[in-house]
Image 1 (tube, rainbow, N blue to C red):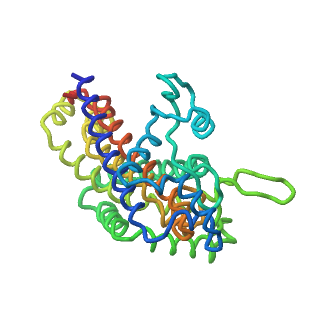
Image 2 (spheres, rainbow, N blue to C red; image 1 turned 180 degrees about the vertical axis):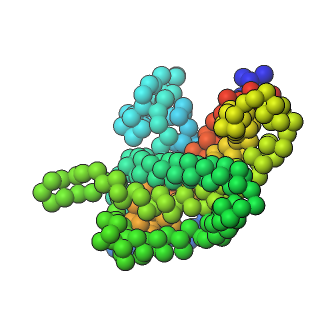
Length: 353
């Protein structure tokens, strides 16, 4: 049953990704600007523009371009012009099929940047680790403090600690990321920078004129804090409400009647059964943070997919934008699939069907 379930989820995931690929392609192909002109610049001659249009398949009908686009994105694709495509895709494996045809096993080909002429995959690969590190740091911060505050609020129900936790979580949910980012950057990165030692902008890797590249973990603190505020607030409220519901169940009273200590009842029996909605929130927020840290990365000049996408939009570098959308959508689908598997590990009562 589990295999059938995951096959169905994989099918749904591919359907979602295919829909996004189609939408991205349609948006790209109804743009008023000529991609060939964007690639070469406005001062390019007509012959060069026509050559680039042919290279980008812009001289073909929309339907044919769509099929070629899917063929480029597919990790297994069929091609003619063997030598040209082998140099273009750098496949892992290739199989000859008939005369002058070849089946390639390759990375998805996302095209080349209009500005740098680099492969889109290479550009995104440089930026993706920054986004992943930032998203994981934010969700770890939100998870640890959110669960701790939620448990504390539930155990101290109707006290000032409970009220303070609720008010703080409401404020965290209400604060937009771009506003919180500007406020946190100004206070801790500018006004109190002498005390905190933090900067308003910076990436994980910095460069020194004499020392070369070095790791700067402190630059991660402010963007991770900003990105983690809203999920922390959600996790706090979910943990509190779910734990209060579990603590009212009969089996908790039975555990106390058996003589178990309070911390044993909370950590061994109550909290694991209260974590299902929390895990849902954590997984959903992780996928959202991976896909939606655009404003935070831009505010703190953090080198990641979000900042790269914003900069590419400003420069009309649409292949980068398209590739970033496809990668974030794929990550979102994969995280949701892994979440379902995680449910069965947390609560054995849940069966995948």
